[in-house]
Amino acid sequence: MSELIYPVLSLWQPWASLMADNRKPIETRHWPAPAWLIGQEFAIHAAMRIDANACIYFGYDPLTIPRGCILSIHKLTKCEKFTERSRDEIGDEYGDFEMGRYGWFAPLLRKLNPPIAAKGHQGIWKWPAPKPEGKE
Image 1: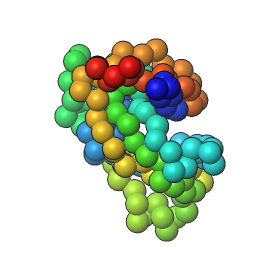
Image 2 (image 1 turned 180 degrees about the horizontal axis):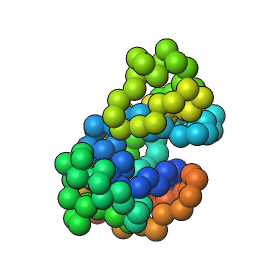
Image 3 (image 1 turned 60 degrees about the vertical axis):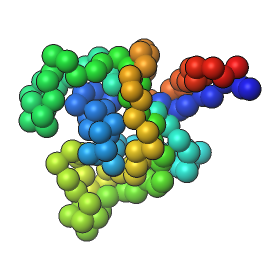
């Protein structure tokens, strides 16, 4: 059995936890998702950096929120450049939906419990997922 390698996107907290808790199905970026990633599963990594005020605002404890770990697996269903119309239709309080930015539509497939420690990187990076116990 070959090792499963996931593409990963690191996010500051609390945005990584918002995605892992299925509260934020759209990640917003200033750059489009690469075409090869559309339709694929990818992981969300909680970076070490946190925004304490945002954590409190969204109901997380900034002292105990997970950091430096893989939190969840998502599927990138599409990437859409925001227009004024789409911003008004899609926008929520979890992302920057300004015109010209991109929405990565990424519904939650599964939350990892417990999260798995991993060192993050900028951009999209690769993570070799550990094999489930009892599997060779």
